Image (cartoon, rainbow, N blue to C red; front, side, top):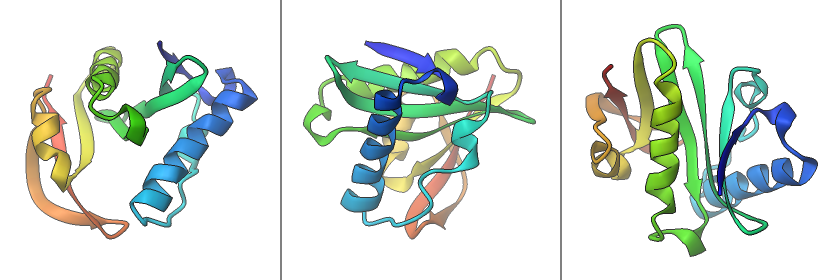
Length: 143
């Protein structure tokens, strides 16, 4: 089951699972110690895509409007749910949700995932850059 919620709409357990999943993957698995919890999470305009398998948060992402479009990010799928088709479902949900905002959708994708995002119509632009020590590329879905 996939839902979109603001931080205020989440239950305490959902919030715990969201942050635990992101820290488990981004900080522990990818060895990327950075400020995982930021103010964008709490913005009233941010929606968190929560994908549950029963009572377990299996994947998540966040989407939010910007001055010139929208952003999709903090996309993660639990290791035991990767390859299940859940990832594409989360990405499609995010793309569909951001259609309500004028302008392009921007994703700052880890460089190894450029081909993955291209499957959804996003196009890489600009040079590769480091974000928290991991190579990234800016990708855009023009609208």
